[in-house]
Image (cartoon, rainbow, N blue to C red; front, side):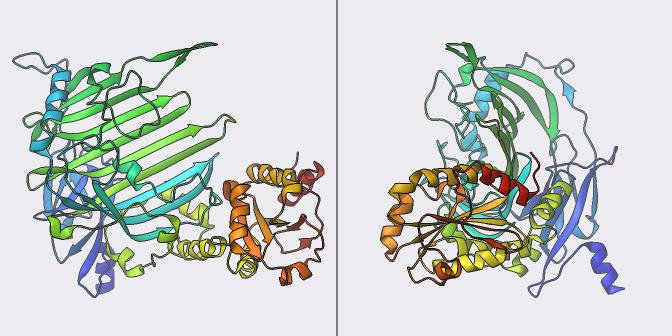
Length: 545
């Protein structure tokens, strides 16, 4: 009976008395899920957000009083023991055509007042915000990786001034991390995490510093305040948030184009919506779509109040980029606030971590089972399953950690690390191994063909370069000079007396070895420049051309 009650409540108990409860927020009239609703613990800054299916998880201690708010719905408070199925009453939105005011609404003037009221509505003192982070991406319809983390963000001046980018006015510290296996093959163009990128979707905290006649698609911060004269605004109507009337204002960036030899090229287009509290002019929600040709970014930010000031509680960026060869990269990045702490005593020191620093973070199973995370949707569950072949995200992180350790810093213990990679790749990936010496100037053309093959078979075949060189510094200069880390090629340094050289019976350089998924080695493989090699690779992959 006790076991049944625990399962029913969706709660995991810990030695510290903290519980992880789960629930769902639904529309009271339609029973449809309500995404991105705020679920907070009354009297604290701790909270969570619902996912696209209206589901949430929240860490509580004992029994807590929860407050659920969402634009367009009546707010609700309830005991946490009764919060597994929360029904919010929808409030009618009064459209522009039927709203009656004593004088006509000037939407641009409302937006100006909203930016002018930032100091009154947002915290201008130092504070720490704790976030849950999730990021996944896809290359040409193949998922590359999924990352989850907890990060602390310290804002020295709060919202006293709008920043042009995440800079020395913030400190970022990643405290917990777990992730899937990586099908991006460690592309050097891939930053390990994009915390700063999604933080900059907060238009209250980040704005371009100077006016510009054109807006760049690749600018990560808004120019809405700075270039307000280049936008047109329209008043859509009035909705409600937490008992207060809210303006809904749509905006659009001026139509912009540039003359080229083939005619006029459409430049960046921006459309969006702002939800602004009618009395205080606090910005409660922003939505924006930015497009340039076949490239698109969609941004949403939600804010909630704590002790009379507003803070972002859910920041989301989705996008798709298409390169000249028509390959596509799409991504989803989001931050969800779990707690706010005020005062200099909460200050942390850190900056967006590099890969080596992330590898030092140990997986803490207790932490992940007892802290508020953004619930996964069926799509995200599929991504995790797809990337790991059914292996849990926790187990994938352990495997990824081992993989990173054995495929990075290949100048040391290169033979040992290569042997690990060869064993790891059995029943998973084909290996194409290139043996060279540091003085490889006479066969650079073959190495360029290796790079081309790597780009063509990326994600299907792992390309490895083993350089026979005693001096690690010389090896490092060689791979840097000739860009041998190009697009995720794995590099190792081995000694002249390496067992591998005897095992593979190698006598002259360069030399190429193919190892299939069963671990079967084909010595003296065709050179990368030989067009017949592609046929062999396609046969191994089961590709018919």
